[in-house]
Amino acid sequence: MVVEKSSKRLTIAIQKSGRLSKESMKLLEACGYKFSLHEARLLAHSSNQPVDLLRVRDDDIPGLVMDGVVDIGIIGQNVLEEVRLERAATQVNNDFSALRSLDFGGCRLSLAVPKEDDYQGVQDLNGKRIATTYPYLLQDYLRRQGVNASTAILTGSVEVAPRAGLADAVCDLVSTGATLEANGLVEKEIIFTSTAQLIQRPEPLSAEKQAIVDQLLPRIDGVLMAKESKYIMLHAPKDRLEQVVALLPGAERPTVLPLSHTEEQVAVHVVSTEKLFWETMEELKAMGCSSILVLPIEKMLG
Ligand SMILES: Nc1ncnc2c1ncn2[C@@H]1O[C@H](COP(=O)(O)OP(=O)(O)OP(=O)(O)O)[C@@H](O)[C@H]1O
Ligand SMILES: O=P(O)(O)OC[C@H]1O[C@H](OP(=O)(O)OP(=O)(O)O)[C@H](O)[C@@H]1O
Ligand SMILES: [Mg+2]
Image (cartoon, rainbow, N blue to C red):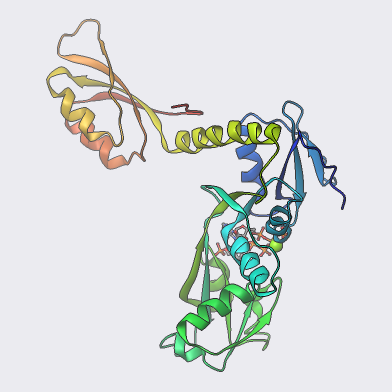
């Protein structure tokens, strides 16, 4: 694979197809970058920014960033840490700089055993064989726990290993737990928690590329902040205004507007930067607020 190297165009590696692909694309598009993707092609050029996308298997992304083949990449922390440990063990450069922790790809790497096993604790895994795609993360954890177990490395279908007689336990990614349950396994220990990460290659970027990253990061922050934030509009009793605003999580100073035909109520517009729960809405109503509207915010710039 030969990536055309330019000192002016920023190359971003993302997963081609899998759990991180859609959200990675969505994030870049929300930051204003337009791409027209051809399913079969690895490389896609942005039509409105000096940015190229390299779409690869997620396992390759940390190495591509650490080796400076691409400038930045979006990758699950689990794969990033696995590659970092593997490269440390084999004395290959494993430097990178962490730019942002993202809000998707949330999962955990857990040890699970067949449900009929009488598991008392991690020490029970001594002398056992554990199937995993993450041998370095697993062995790092076992070493810290003082457990001596062997690994069976599988790159897929790890969860079927015990039934197939390949291993006694598994160390696999879990999100809802449905995959483990469907395979008669029970989660016992969480060894690593993960979300997607934006990382950059260790060597400094050219001035042109750095300028693109400097533009991208505040945009990402704006997108992440906007996701949690809501624009709230409501009618509030004038004499309870302070209490109403105090109820709204992370609210800045509100805009207060008069309402026609009434002196007792005012219209309140406010941006709330934290998650708004139904309970808060119910309390607002109990306080005498009405016409409560909660609107999503697409972008924010501080
Ligand atoms: N169930 C899940 N829910 C949320 N995020 C997940 C889940 N499973 C995995 N992830 C995250 O998404 C990443 C990619 O998962 P995926 O299953 O698409 O990888 P893969 O099969 O190794 O893909 P590839 O073909 O690119 O190698 C994982 O490394 C992890 O960070
Ligand atoms: O706890 P759950 O919600 O069931 O999610 C966990 C499963 O999700 C991931 O696989 P994915 O579905 O992405 O398939 P793949 O491993 O075959 O790529 C992961 O490898 C687990 O098998
Ligand atoms: Mg992979």
